[in-house]
Length: 237
Image (cartoon, rainbow, N blue to C red; front, side, top):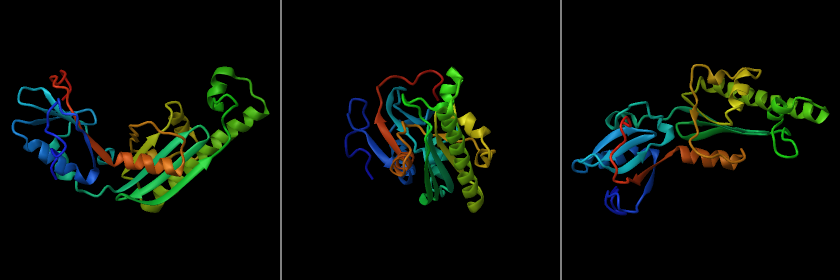
């Protein structure tokens, strides 16, 4: 595999390329083989530095590899071939949820939920009540549905957790205000106990099966993008 087939590792070059998680080790090895190149830890991946410290490129590591804080490229290379394990992906928005269970990269379970919880102008009922207060029948129904949605999500997540004997990773995409409500819901989300969820690092549309698959594909891919020739900012290492 020649990473330079679309152009040299040069900040002036327009090339960029994506790669699947299975090629991560090969990508990092080839980048390290560039004369004088150094790979330093950076947010979501590594900065590829020239001998003078300028940025030649940036490597964004596939989220499924769960890059550890401060992990070196050599350390990641050593474990990049390990199985991905049991992974739970949860996409949650007002009135809808999409859940998927993967084992070593293969989808083995999936489920979507949809409930009427959004008012006429698009605001979810729990959010509306925090600012407006007074509730009538329609509002109470939407609130009940919002609670039921979280309960259904937790019931299914807990059931999958038990069926496979635990999760190795949980990927979560939901509004900031929704996660505390998810954690307070009954039944409690045992799939989040002792396991910090990985935030899905991309915009998520309406949770549906197709969106679940799109998000999963994105989690499995990394990218090499050209640098800007600037020195790495102080502290970004």
